[in-house]
Image 1 (spheres, rainbow, N blue to C red):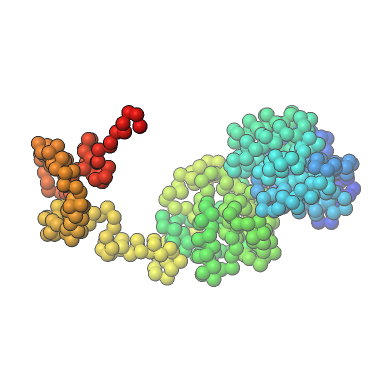
Image 2: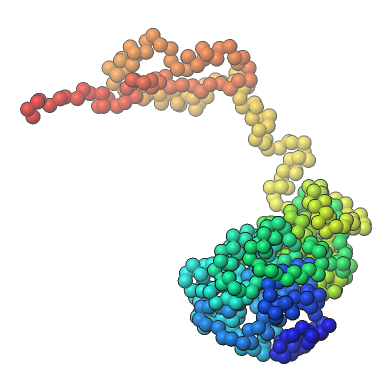
Length: 514
């Protein structure tokens, strides 16, 4: 079947032919006729199968008739990340070149003023991330009552990023009679609940069972030690020994780890870029453009690059960190082996990752073989040069058997609680002598009558320190911390010896007639 058999308009067919595509993918072949028939569609397909074109092409055909009004978009596409939203806009620019359609992009990192100006001119296609879209609606600069078609793309990623409450709010702002297209690669129970709530008699299009990987991707796992520097050395060795490596994405679980691995690879002579959620939007787009153009063969990224990014010629994917969620593994390795090409996905697995690997193999329904070759890592001083200074110091202490700077909580800490006599130190140090002299000088400054009243009051009572010592007399003194020296004049209820003398003067009552 060709694109001309799907019912697309002549302008759209011409744009598709100009890009060089002739035959639709299975998801496009099954979904496009239902979208053109104005039916709700639930599309389930593994990543890299052409889901974006499955809704972009029929939307362009539908939007040829009609006109947008100010602040009231005709169609709305929700994406979980800025990169995916920008990529969908590129698809509209490519396939809709012969049409006069206004396409707006609402994402973070861009000024509200520029986005408001585009909304005022009227928008046929609004592509947005949920957070920025709700910001515009709360400001009153956007009305969703004119939306005719709603697309929720990468719904399982929306779930992982916590956008489901925002999606529910947005679905209540658009008309009930809208057409809804729902695309996802996996179907957890929460996603199934959303589809039942917001889709009306949808046409289910499933070209592969949920959470399957492409058969064109060769998967392997390589064992590694627990230490991070061992994983980094193993990664560098895998990059050097990889066969037919054209470019690669290296995935990490945390943004901090992305920065560390990026700096390590740069230090060892690799041409590499970084991509994670804390980077500003221009830097993120620049890193992606350099990677797409081949200026940077390696890209260290967090899961922000794992969903839907269309970089068709990625030859390798390396999981520096095994993902915590098994679904993320499917999306990560889906960056390679796209559009029928072959690819390689290698995961570095530590002993702590075994539980996650079992969950991944259970999800994809196949076992991941171990890579061939001996990948034992012997970390010498040169290999550890990129490690943080603190961790190198801890390892040096560990290698010397604990000698060197005493650690907190060790033998020296236990020794500090012994009595001074047991440690051979004088009981009254200079610090104690100075504090005692300070106490005597402060007592000398007290009025004599105030001290006399205090001594009479407590003449028959032992001081607090003496009472405490009497109560603890049955406790052995060896190994027990020495109690702090108490002040020689302790304050008790009713004791005013600690007050200045002028506050102890009697108050003269005024005459009754005054």
